[in-house]
Length: 218
Image (cartoon, rainbow, N blue to C red; front, top):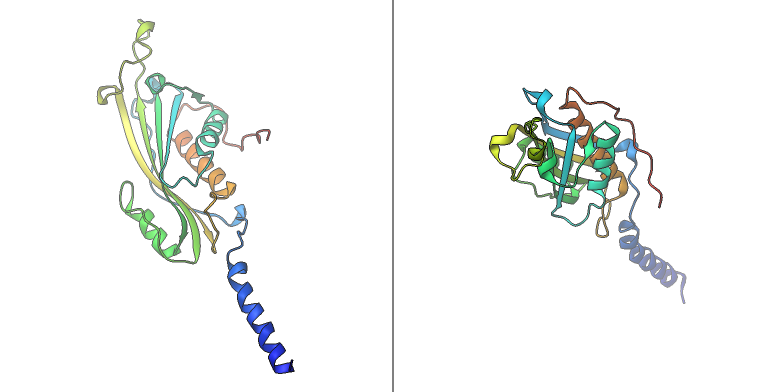
């Protein structure tokens, strides 16, 4: 085989390895994640009548963001909230909807966030990787303390609500990260922390702190 032929074979091998190199899943650097948001979770006017109990609901339209509910509940517990399993027992009802997760053009993502809650949420382009979500917070009054049997509401209706507010939030990393098997844990942890902090800020009577929760055992 001539030297020229050998060089040609080596070139073909190198070219064949390029797609594999491009598909390697790169870990996200939590120090380089950027949080984008529009809207704000608001404090209820009659905040004293809202109990510090919270129900968290998560709907993941992407099936790529795992553990978001548990992470968010951990942050809220650290902030002084009591987690309840029944929304009828909650003063705070939080609905998290994961809208999109994947590669995107950062400029396109910023535009999607700026459009606000319940607007177009698709991701397109390249250059970054993101998780995009909408957050709805409903704050409700405490039923009459004179009749403890009414402490668990029979339904969740607007007459019990004191306030509701919405926020759109995204976590962005520069560069391409594969998400076919799920978003890196740093995305979930960052999203949960930011949502927990925003809910804590909407409660003027909140106790506790917003430091990172202890890592759970594997």
